[in-house]
Image 1 (cartoon, chains in turn blue, orange):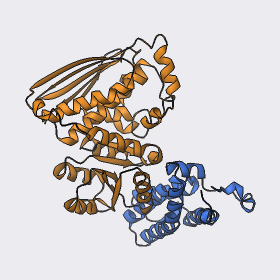
Image 2 (spheres, chains in turn orange, blue):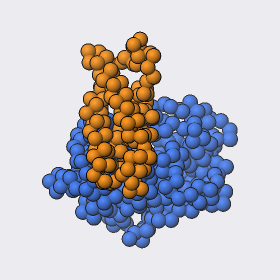
Image 3 (cartoon, chains in turn green, blue):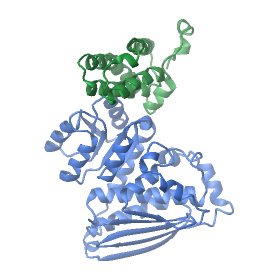
Image 4 (cartoon, chains in turn blue, purple):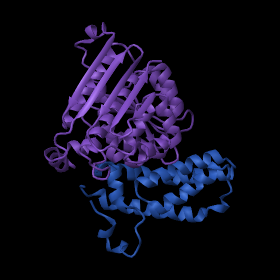
Length: 131
Length: 299
């Protein structure tokens, strides 16, 4: 399996995913990892939208739930920085607060964007590889 | 062919759990997105086991466990717990769930946990009618330090409980799971004095050889080699009672029992005791900490 460190163009960019942890989360099954990467690429933006929609509608429950799901998905991949931002939103929602002032929404968007970029790079690297 | 229903509102989680379990030979996996969908599923099909998330919209894991306990008591339920759902998970264990796996440890533990539960449910019906005539059973075992004796002992207890009609299938699974945990504690932590850190996190890991050298070495060494585990079992129409005593130095049970089960649900070391404390009605230690008494009353 290719890893981020094998690509010279990525060496200057800090990895946001711990691929060893991700593979462990999948019980060491590389095929399952590829399959879950495909799902997360679709699901992470969906959960991110759900967070902001929940905030816009003043629906703390929906916001918290989406943040909880997103956090859990990110943790399987060891994407701790993004997961911890999602956790902050979850805690905000838990307290019934939907104003995103205490959490930097743009920072969360950027963190998710970085995760998705790295997932896509993984997808491309492994699309023709046999893991 | 074991059929497993996975209940989780997260697409990512369903894919992971489905992949981990679906890769096991003979396992088939079906899915529901929340407790409500799971109940609908159960009206048309009966899985052999349910693996469920705790936090879900439209009937969460606790509500699902309650519904299953009421209408489908023979189906064991395994909880998937996340940080933040510990207290609700302990409640679900108290209300009928048969086991749990932390989401952070799915890759390591889920398959192992599910296979253990299936092993426990594999009841041999040979003596069912005869055992049905029993009113009271007393066993006294003195086990050497061979973990291979634990499964047959738990199977025997399961058969007697089933044959005597003492608990429903779910109660039987739960007693089996907790008894197995207590025996493992007595052997590995008690007699062989292997620390929580040294023990592999999974039973599967242990069976596959992790830590085996240490186990084998200690089984041949003084002071470990002559130590035994005394297991006294009494089963009758009102209760089952297990007294398990190892020859180890004992452990500081007062500190552990002072904590609520929720405090240790996310830790490796605490899993056995969480199951024991939530599944049995009474749990007591002797002052030295090398003997545990477990009692489950018939309701």
